[in-house]
Length: 293
Image (cartoon, rainbow, N blue to C red; front, top):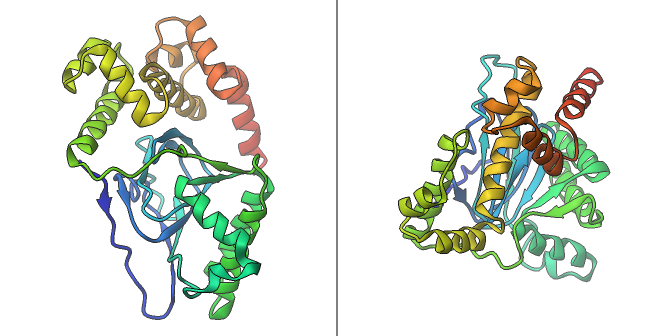
């Protein structure tokens, strides 16, 4: 399945859209669009695909997605039956929202540079994320010119953020490929891995399924994702373990085996390498953060 061109619904009484979704799977297809996207995740967690970047996402992440950058968010099979649960707030706007010459004004050089950087996808952290979250709330509740002002202010805040708080996701060399066969192949690999990551996936098997020799498959996967196939599977397993730790229904040893690891020492080693926490400390940190909300 190739990346789909998504047509963003337009509104008659505004120059950009802000929509809120109470479904976890609304952004679950590999897609792109000419509009820039500012998305805030309110609830849930899963795996985020942004160009050639693959990483875990969680509640309160905010991402600025540039024009025509393929992306999607795959939740960990999470769909609340509570109609009050809000999963995401999404703003779509055109690069030319303020007019063709606006970004060329000397005062707007930082915003122009930000628009260019957003083509890689930008993850917001720390104070930058917190300030933009508040401004997104103001956009939702405001009318008229103030909506434009708050959106512009959000871009200014992001453009002033440091490298610890505004983090590029996709690689510099990533280009959106329009080849249907290539997109079908990489999507097949993703789907196969999501279905089978709890089991051992022999390199010979996945290579054969995609028409490669094992060594060629490794080079292909690294060129498309920026990481090794082994690291990708480890991240899927650790991500699944994070979900189970949040649910707090199984003990750590059960979570280890349910996530596809064969022994506890390997699980502990890779979990800490990816999250910087031991499984126990990760769970304690999550519980403490949740209680403080």
